[in-house]
Picture 1 (tube, rainbow, N blue to C red):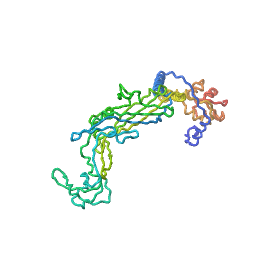
Picture 2: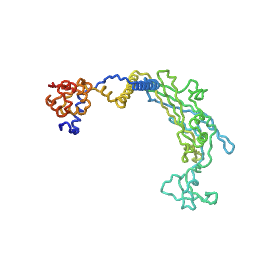
Picture 3: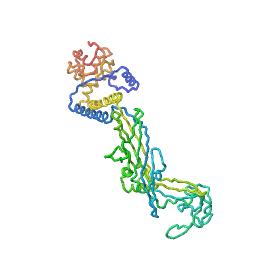
Picture 4: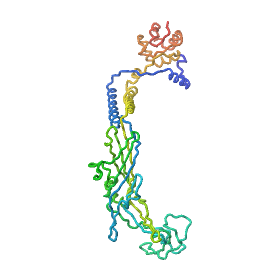
Length: 474
C-alpha cells in the first residue's frame, strides 16, 4: 500500500484556520425542511409549544401587562397627622393630660414621625452637684481623687471641680453597707438618673394617624392622591373600609408585630416601624380606581434577640430663665418612630411596546423546535441518519488523489457496496468531489491498493459516478 495513503497526517493549525476562514467567506447556510414522522418527537414538540404559549400569553402578555408602557419613577409627598389624648398618673394621684404637641417630637419630619410613649423627666438648673453614681471613676475618698484630667471621658455629666463632696456618701452594695463619696461637678444639676422608673403614657394604642400621600407619574403627566371623599367618619379596615387612609395605632402595631409581649415592650422601650404605600396604576382605566396597598413591618430587632441598646429613644430639653437662673426640663423620650416609604408604577397601552414584546414571544416560542432538534440529532437512536438528511453540502470541492483515497478507506463499507452493486447511486453512498489527477494514476492506485478480487475494469464506468468522479475514465 502507498505510504501516502497510510501515514496519518499531522494536525496543522494554519491549515485549520485557513479552512475555517475559507468556509466563513464562501459557505452560506439556509434552513432545510425535513418532514420526520415520529410520534414521540411530535408529542414533545406540541407539549413544549403549549407550555410556552400559555406562559407567553397568560403570564407575560396578560398578567404582567406586556402590552403597556410602564413608568416606575414615581414622585411622592407624604403628610402625617396624629390625633389622640393621652394621660399619666403620678404618685400623688394626680393626672396629667398629653395632646399632640406634647408627644410628637419634633413637630415635623420628612416622611417620618415620632410618637412619644414613655419618658423620664428631670428638672435641672445650672449649678454644682455630685456626679452620677453610675460613673465608676466618680467615687472618691479625698479631693485628689477628683482632679481634672486632660483626657476626654464621655461618661461624665459636667466639669469636675476637683472637690470630693462630703455630703455624697452612698451605699456601694446592700450587703456590706460600705460607703463612698462622689466627686463634684459643675453643670446641669441634679444629673439625670435613667435607672429610675419611667412614665408610660396611657391610651397610645387608641391614637389615630392620617397618612396623606400625593403622587405623580411624570412620564404620563398623571397626579393622584390616596384620600377618599368622606374622611371624617372613616377608620381603615382591610375588609370594610380599605380606602380610608386613617389608621389606629393598635392596628399598625398588630400588623408590624404579632407577639403581644413584644408589643407591650415596644410601648415602653420604643421601636421603629416601616409603613409602605405601594401603587400599581392601570391608566387604561379610570385613575380613581387606582388605590395604594398598605403594609407595615418592624425594622428594629426584637427584644428577646437583643440585650444592648434596645428600642428607640433620644433626649430633648425645654430651656428657660427664671430669676436670673437658667433652668430646663430634660426628657429621655421612648416611643414609636414611623418611617414612610412610597413605591409605585403605572402602565398604559403602547403599540410599540406591544410589537416589541410580541417579537420576543415569537423568539421564545422557537425554543420548542430547538429542544426537539437537539434531541433528534444527538440523543435519538437514528441521530446519524437524521443528520445526513438535514445537513447537506451543495457544491463540489477539489481534492487530491491522496485525499480521495483517504475518504475511500474511511468508508470501507461503502466501497464494498459499490463493487457489489454497481447500480448504486451517488446520493446513497459517497459525497461528491472532483479528482484532480489523471485517470491512469487513479487506475494504477486502484490496482495497487484494493484487493484484486474486487477490481473489475468493466465496472469502472459504473463506478465513476458512484464515487462522484467527473474525469472521463477509459
